[in-house]
Amino acid sequence: MPFPQYDAVHVISDIHLGGSPGFQIFNQQDALAWLINHLAAEPSHRKTALVLNGDIVDFLAEPAPSNEKACYFRPTHAAKDLTRIMNDPEFTEVFQALSTYTRSENRNLVIVLGNHDVELALPDVRALLAERLCGGSDAARGRLTFAMDGTGFACRVGEKNVLCIHGNETDAWNPVDYRALNRIRAEQKRRTPLTPWTPNAGTKMVIDVMNGLKKKYRWVDLLKPETETIPALLMAMDDHAVTWSRLKSLFGVAADFMRDKHRDPDSFLGLQGELPGQEVSEDTAFQRVMASSYPSLVNAPVAGTTDMDSLLHEMDAHLARGTSPAALASSPEQADFLGAWGAVWDKIRGRSPEENMREALQGWLKDDPTFNPKTEDDTCRSVRELVGPEVDVVVAGHTHLHKAINSGTGPAYFNSGSWIRLMQLTPDLLEKEPFKKVWAVLEQGDMESLDNATVNGRPLIRHIRSVVSIEKEDGGEVSGALATVEGADGAYSLCPVPDGRLAC
Image (cartoon, rainbow, N blue to C red; front, side, top):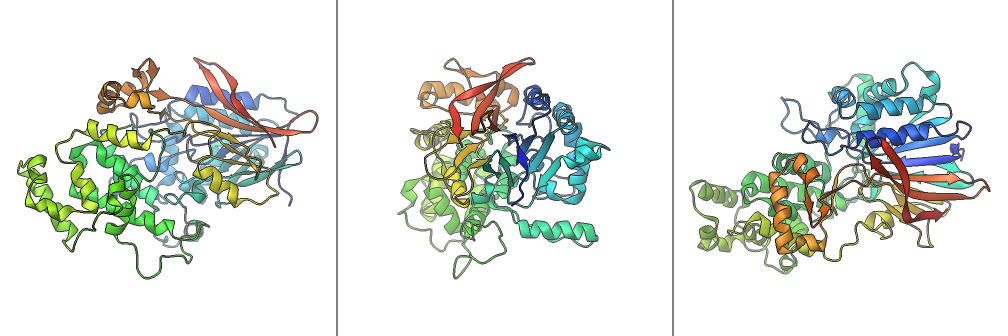
């Protein structure tokens, strides 16, 4: 097939430009602008491409309009959101650098759709971004490519086939319904009523649960790894969060997750593949998800026929009257909360959020290899399984964890990581005394405290500014390399990641 041919392809992803001041998880504008300008200044005789491999802007981080309580998808005001993001002083240098790059000779810019920037697929939003990046230059516009259909971006470097794909396509929490998205795009052009958008479980988690918790805990989406244990992790944060409304949101997200997970793996949620019989209930879904974090739930008896809503309303009423969680835990009503409710009650029996969080993290992060660039994860395995034997290199993002893996079977695999703040809690930080210092910072909740915090002599927040480069060398061979941008105050350089170079 006549895929585009380049001498070099550079890939970055998961920048997440967006959010109100104080809630922005990206703060590396100078370093990212340096990288883009550095790539623009490479020898002009080499044809290169910069691939923004998904989640470049973050519409889910933008406040919903005042007349909307929850906003999972923003077709009617996404252009206004993008305008605000592009004009935010924390991001303007990035867009200026991208504009300079796109208007440079032999420099091609490719934008791949992610799961936080789905609105970029809409015609008016795409036109607005193209105007900002290219202005009136037809040549620049011809070097800008939008890969918005969920199939990624395929090209060739030398004699090697390269595929860049965001990675949410294989994530049961975050599939995108591209069929519905295409309908909405067509309806916008025809000026007809828009098809209702059904959000996936990951989007509902962000909007219904995480954005609310971020008002106090602004770090909730910085902690890695991010797994199916998120609902249980959120339960551990704060006993004040254990309310009927929040539990209902969690139950609903869990049910959506179980629904999406059992559909066909091609990301088209409208196709067949539902569980036979009936929809997964909120009770069943919540128990399954919580069981992944609390193994004792696996064989626990399922709650009886007691109505969930009335029980949770009653619990809130008791707490509002001043009844202590400890007293409630020892009351006869506790028997009604066996099975799936056991995990809920564990969180309100007088234990501090600090104790709950440390215990949960110790279990989930024991011997965790997440930050090791050579360790395969589920995304690596599933993305490699998607492609055929003629694909030589596949580059994903989505997980926020950079990788460079070549196991001898299948294509060389890279993950372009992320440019947002990341928090890695190593086993030594989860010991009782060090975690007191960690929790003191987490309790403050604001980004400035996180950025300035050190525990055991190390910063609590990490910046792993990753870029993947696939290049044809002078002899015609093609290799891929994982690197990071290191430095500060304008003095930056590209530093290879150890063992991050792979023959392709």
